Length: 115
Image (cartoon, rainbow, N blue to C red):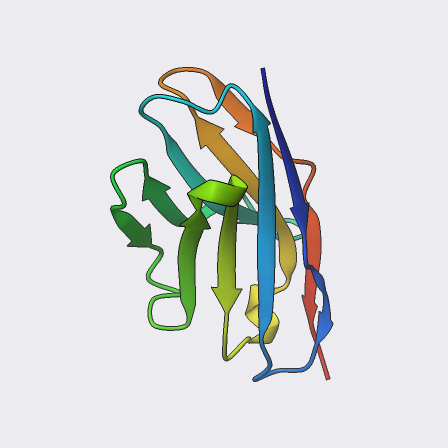
């Protein structure tokens, strides 16, 4: 019913920037929450940033001031702008959509921050 495809990951040096995209298709109407989540090797999956259909955003303390979540409704695309990247940001980043009990995940995109 909903398909999510992430893109934009890659290798970047500490202090650099990346912009991740999540393209959505399918059942895209009504009230929803979308977000970015990440999982590093040997770590639990954690929430990075969220945005509601009303435009309310939230961020993990570890990325506050460095990452920005946004969306382009006309293109059915959500973004995560990541600045001042640190090695600790290295992880697989996943896109998530909650249609009100119906949860969908993208396949993930790898972000590696290393010199």
